[in-house]
Structures are given as C-alpha cells and as structure tokens.
Image: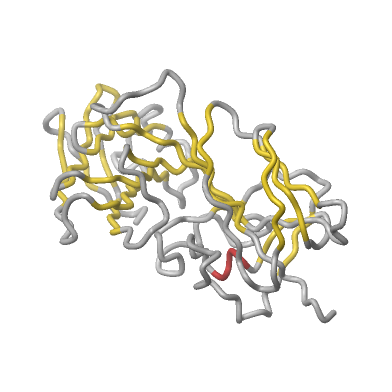
Length: 281
C-alpha cells in the first residue's frame, strides 16, 4: 500500500462516495491510510490537508512526510451514518496536494462500539505485553478491524507475560463482547499473576472483579472528561496481583447539529483481561 497512492491536484474538495449495502442508521469503521514517500521527488517538508466525513470535519492530515519509509499514518473513526451514502472528502488547505493511499470501510455488525449521538474516534488501542511489530494484528484476525499497537511507555516495575502455547482461549463468551484477537489475549503485563482486583478510574472505585482461567473479561465503557487516569489493584484477600491485556480509549465526536460541551468526552472501553495462569500449576 505504501507504494501506491492517488493525488488530487485539481479542485479544492475531492470526495469518495461509499454506498454500503447495509444502508443508513448503522455503525461503520472508516480508516484512511496516508504515506507520502516522496512520490513527487520534491522532498516536501510540510504537507497538510483536511479530511471530512460528509459535511463534518474529521481531522487534519499532517506529518505524513516524517515517518519511516515503510510505515503509513492512519486516521480512524467509528461513524454512525444517518444516510445511505457516506462521503469521505480530502480538502486542499494550501499546504500541498492532498493524496491518499487507502480507504477501508467495515460494517460494525453486532458491535459493542455503538453511539447514535455522534461518532467515536479511536485514540489508543494498546496491546499490552505483546511482541508483534506495530500494526500486525488487524482484520481478519480482528473481526472489528482494529489495529493493535504495542505500548512502549510502560513502567519498569511491570513485566510481560505470554501464553503463546495456549490455543483454547474462549473469545466468544458473553464476558468478551469486544472479541479481542487471540494473539492480543495471549500476552499481558503484570507485576506477577492475578486473581481478584478493583479498578480506580479518575478517583472512583469499581469492582470487585475476579478472572477465570482462559476466559476474557471486558469491563464496560465509562464516559470521562479531560484526563484519564486508572489503576488496577489487588484486593486484600487476593493471593496474586492483577494483569492487563489491552485497553482502548475513544473520543466521542458529536454530530454538528447535536448539543456539545466545551470539554471533550472520552470513552474508555474495556480493561480487557483474563487469567493465563494454569490453576493446576
């Protein structure tokens, strides 16, 4: 994908017209890929243009010429479409010719990522304890088209654990509506193993949570504002400390004709975890 792209040197606004067969009033995962790669041999120091979904400003594409040659920048949105047609538009803002390398559209059937009050913009999808190169766990291994990235900024006090030899992880259970890929669930971070724990989220306490062997558990999303701070702590009766496989953070992006606040809302999905330790050992 990094070796091909389409440019739009003419016109201020150029759009792709997407007509999914599932129609309106549905959620769709839309992802756009960008990689400059010095395709024009101009070594441009700054390229910047706007990306719209319908009439709504989605994001400003920038930094595409500073990344390594083999990687691209992606912009993602889980969009609730009120029309049968979805338009993805590139708008020239005077800082270089708009271009695009790829565009994905996935119908989010039976997905837990639903918001009829606006769209969700993924801000972080971290595969904790993983060792795959960035972006290697994605569709079709992930049924919801997420791209899982490693978290490189972990505290030195935590350690990575892995259960690569295990193949019978239950990803279809009712406690795992987010249906994490098996490769994400096989790795985690922990100061040890786990048993029972609570969650502290922006000063509020949730729990108690107990994990079962090889059964994923997804903690339902919470809507927050401003900073997101959380910790997981073993209970007093727990013999082992907790682990964490992965987590996601989304920004709730209101539709333009919806009431908005001056502060952004953030939706934290999950703390996705399971007990990889064999209870018989």
